[in-house]
Amino acid sequence: MNGAYEDELAAFAERLSDLHIAAGRPSHSEISKRAVSVTLAKSTVNDALHGKRLPKREFLIALVRVLVACGDNKDTVRISHDDPRLADWAERWNRLARLEKERRRVQQDQPASYSLPASPSIEYERPPRDASSHQLEAAKEGLQEILADLKTYEDRARDEFRELLDEKAQVEAELRELERELGQQRADHAELKRKIAKLERDRLRLDRQVRELRQRLNEIPTERLALVEEQNEILTRQHSNTYEWGRYETLTRERIEAEMDAVRGTLSKEITRLTDELADSARKLAAADLLIRDLKNR
Image (cartoon, rainbow, N blue to C red; front, top):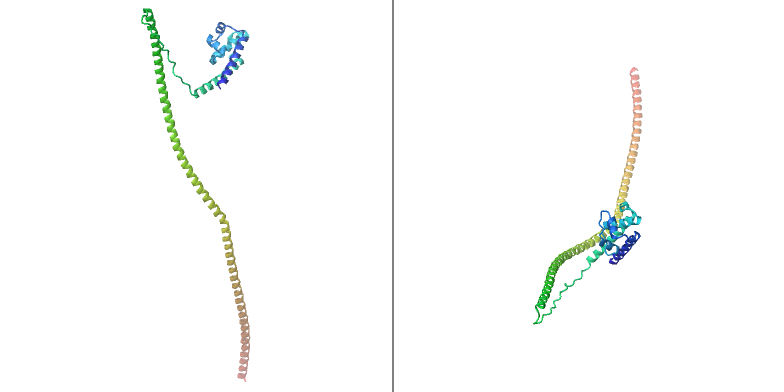
């Protein structure tokens, strides 16, 4: 990723340098004089042209606007902000800014190398016993410089030591927090394993119950069929019994009616006979009466 940024920055600087050449290589004073609302510092212009660093977006657009105006031999203000050439350079800047941001992120993720601050030299040449006042003064000044350098080094070392202690304490605090979270995660993991084991047991139990119930459901139609057949047999027997009883009642009724018809026939004949006999007796009585009257009249 770092190489991608460096390559893109080099290509960016090369294109910007080509634009500067196409504009007639205007001097810095001319570029500065043509700039509108943005100060184009010489050092920043040189850094941009040589690919040392990526300038700010507003700076780049202002510089490109000046170079385009120089190439077109126009005033800078006549180069519209909507000019497609400015849009192309803005897109190049956006692409480079994304690469630079990614490079910084990668650099931050990598562990920083550390080396102790460079110790100052404390080599000191002692003046001879017969040294002159000038030599003694020079030796004193040399010692003072060494002491000053050593003091500066000590202060820097102490500051860095405190910074390291603070960073170490922060790292240890973060480590403890991560260990606490890890312990909690392990506890959660153990609890999760217990829940999974319980769910596995429940699943086995439910599987067994489902199998048993499925088997029972498969048996029910057979049992229902047997019961229906038994019910049909009972109904058939009931129907048969009902039919026989009805047949018996019919025959009995027919026999009784036949007997009654016979009795009625006999009675009718007897009545006819008695009627005839009664009529005959009446005739005989009438004849007897005539005979009696006739005898009386004699």
